[in-house]
Length: 466
Ligand SMILES: [Zn+2]
Image 1 (cartoon, rainbow, N blue to C red):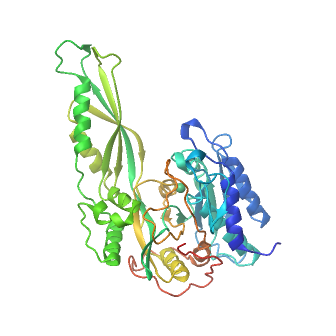
Image 2: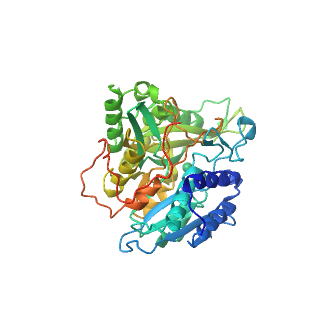
Image 3: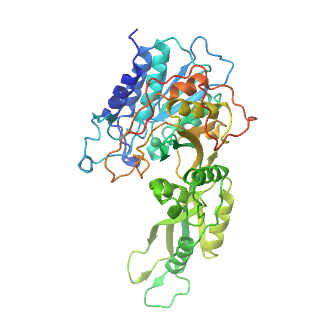
């Protein structure tokens, strides 16, 4: 077996994965997921871990592997570690580097997926390969899943797997994947690392107004376009009441403490302006929301159509789905009806337990200035799939961001240039130290993590601001 050098390998694996163009164009098609899954399978196979590649449709490949090394306690429920292999498309002309070259420059890997989330895929793979090569088993079984189609809603990846092969996931008690783990530098001796413990749910709705069709020159008190437009305007103008989820409260309290500010919860975007794009995400998780996004009616200017429809993108705080639907039903009034076209559950778990402590400890071991803070995410991830099977989901793919950066390194922006990624082998810590879930432990939400390393924690690479 080759000597182990995970710090070097994590970079080369990430670059290799970026070079496999896995652009996901949604209904317009995708590519590369099969090649990426085969690459990952080969890397696992090299250290004796067999895996299975499952396809929801031809070449829409998801890889599943069981790592249960000798010495691990198989009586414990497995920890699911998951990453997706697909990326949102990139237009090379908009980039300062080739988005699919996996170039290493200034100590960072550049390219589409360098942050979301081929970096994490590489971290996990390099850590596990290292542990196999150096004979250090995990304390509990590890279930590895690398999914297809996350960037188009997971229908051909995580959701398909949950619906068709739930037995591959349902024995796992907890899962770690995206989106959290990135840092916000407060000052030299204090950096907040956000750990995702909740996601908003979504309802994509169709509003339908049926009226009386007729000639445009006649009076028409039952005009579908007029009725629909009024309903859409009411939804667009509605001010949704604050619904502060525990993760949101903990996050806001930690930010107030860290920056020594008082946040105006009526205008968090302004209070948190210094956090850049994070402020927008926080703003989006203060309340339910509903944005009109599509309108359709008519075929000729002098013909009043019998029907008009609109699309609404509605998102709800965990626990507030019914309130969202009740409010919308009231807002649209009696002349418009509402159909739910797509719905996605909200996800939430407590920021407590042995696994959370392991994450805190691994951050502290890498960065003495680290403070782990839970947060509620406005969007959705594969966690929505696993969560249906009762798995507690955390977003923790560690990433030290530049102290001066005012934008969270989200790589899904379509017009943004490139992003940077400093890779780390932090997963070594929670792979090594995660134990039985313990819901009874005291939440340690916004406390500074303990400085002690857990047994077996080890970091061949660094999480450090660049
Ligand atoms: Zn992602």
